[in-house]
Each structure stands twice: as structure tokens, then as C-alpha cells.
Length: 226
Image (tube, rainbow, N blue to C red; front, side, top):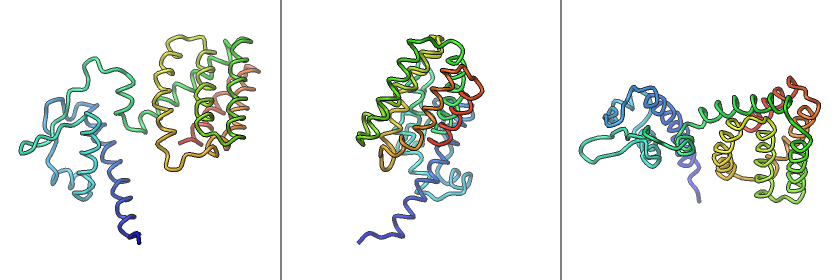
């Protein structure tokens, strides 16, 4: 029989570790801990974040696997040099989820705003086709197809902005977004179904060139997903 108390304790440790991971990443990004330098030892981190040893070890293990920290037995934990010529997709994958969400929100809102101004009939056709495929996948309970159609829907809007830099940036984000779908605890088409009307509203706002409505709906979609 599963030990419920133990499982809850493990879940709490992971949740606390996420907070430690986020703060350490922030400190590294802002230069508090520079590449090649040692981060504080476990006892200091435990006191600094007011958490137990297992939480600190879980956070360090995660950051080590991401290539941000390097644990050297007997010497301590060092910050890796990840800044030189690091591809954006790799940088996104090692970033805290909150940071990625914040940047994605800014990106999607600006894309939607521009799409309402510059979309053409071909753009609207691509967005509509992706939305139709998204609904068909939901109806048939095909999770993978729904995820693919959802990504294609948002990529079509990025292309409709007619800003190649934004479209390229969003293309890089799509890989991280797609991975976030598969990492959810219980992937199910219901997560797409609950926002489908919002996606339809977004299409209508872009079609009607209603910038205020488009940015409002994008915000609602992002709030629902995260």
C-alpha cells in the first residue's frame, strides 16, 4: 500500500524545490553568482531559503541536469558558463517556467495586435484551418493532434503579424510550448476543449481587426493555460 504521508512529503519537497530553482536561476542570470564561481554550500542555502536539505539537493540536481550548475565532489557546486553563443531554444529550456510564461505573454499579445492590423485573406484561411483541425482533434479525443493543431493555430497568427522577427521568435517558442503540453500530469484533450471558444473568439477579433478584443482574448487564453 502506498504511504500517502510520504507521497505528500515528496510532493511538498518538489514544490519547494521549484521555488529554490527559480530564485537560483534569477541570481545566476542577474550576476549574483557568476560562471565558474561556487554557490553557497547546502547549510547556507537551507538557511537562506528556509527549506530542508532534501529540497536543496533536489533543486541542485535539477539545475545540474540542465547544465546550469556543476557539482564537484569535495569542492562544491559551481556555476557553469552557459552564456556564450547559447541558442535561444536551449536558453528557454533552462529558464524558469514563470520567466518563459512572462516573455511568451508579451510575445503573443504583440503578435495578436499586429495580426489584427496586417492579416490578409490567406492568413485568415490558415488560422481557420488550424482552428477547425483543433476542434476535430478534440472531438475525436486525439491529444497529439489537438496539441499540433493548437501550435499551428498560434503559429499562423504569428505569420499573420507580417513581422518576420516576431514569427521567428515564436517559432523558437513553439518547441518549448509543445514540450510543456507533454509534461502535464494527465494530458487530455479537455485542456484544449476548455479554451476552444476563446480561440474562436481570437480568430473573430483578428478577422474583424478588433485589436482590443484580440489582446483581451489572448490574455484570457494565457491565464487559463497557466
